[in-house]
Length: 269
Image (cartoon, rainbow, N blue to C red; front, side, top):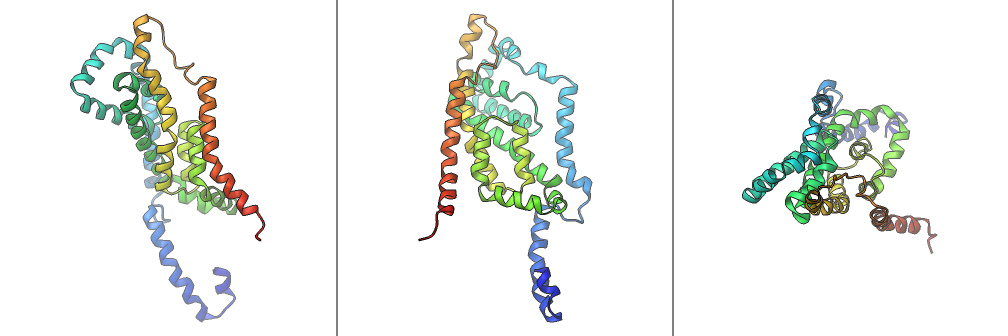
């Protein structure tokens, strides 16, 4: 657009003048315009990092563990029985906070959801809480470095963004299904690559359901482990069979992408 303007006279400048307001409006909607102070852009992400630092510094993780769950089992189960809706809401909010602040307690909370609320309700609470918390991280990251990174990175990032955006929904579902990368990293990368909020939320919601169901099913049977007096650890939850099943789901998710690429490479008749 700019090159075309430079190659013509004064009359050719009008189209570029009329094309700029939509871009300005888009920038204003994202909240990351050049006139916005840097501290305001980074404030949401800084608060999330500060929350994680406080959690680790105060060693609050010792209060959210399988040992604590076993110790307070009777009290927690009684609260759930008498105030199911209220405790479910409270648990979901705790899960939102844990994901938003990237607290290292997601596995304990997910298994605890199955233990306290059962496999089905527990899975629903985990999926809603994790999706909401991940969305908060996504929005904070997009506010902090989304547009600023795209302005400074140059054409290489634009090419990466173009490739990612074309199949962003499928890519994110695969990343959610296969636990190869930390959850927080998968929350941040789509923000840097300009994924739309709607696709991010939907892909996250669908992608974490299978894994959440696996962990809450383990939690649903945790009572028998406590009754036996054995010590429980989450290290053996992701068995080879479970991993193969999740990889299989990821392969199913990637099939439409493979088909699309094959059709694009097929010569026209």
